[in-house]
Image (cartoon, rainbow, N blue to C red; front, side, top):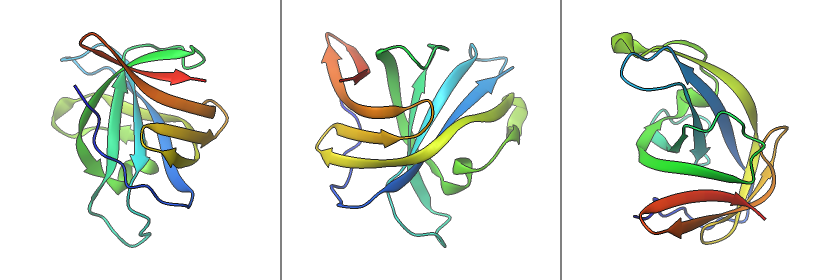
Length: 129
């Protein structure tokens, strides 16, 4: 299991953490949306989405599931999801920078500091350093 390959850029990009709740198909969880294309005008599939069932984002080790790219609008969207998929509420937002492959620096209120991706068996984690 591997994450999508982030472009290594020497600039800050936006991210958001969304609480996704009342989805009849899934337990409440957080979606971490990472912008991977620095283009304000783009509505392309330009966010890498990581999903975690852990509701305490202050944990040092978040079990995550990488998903395919989602649309940039989710950096700012809050409200009902289409197709009866529940609701999302933004609980954090800010900037992040890729320091090297799979090593991220977050500058937000909830996600803050350095994190990296770690594989343990078949599980993938986002770990605070």
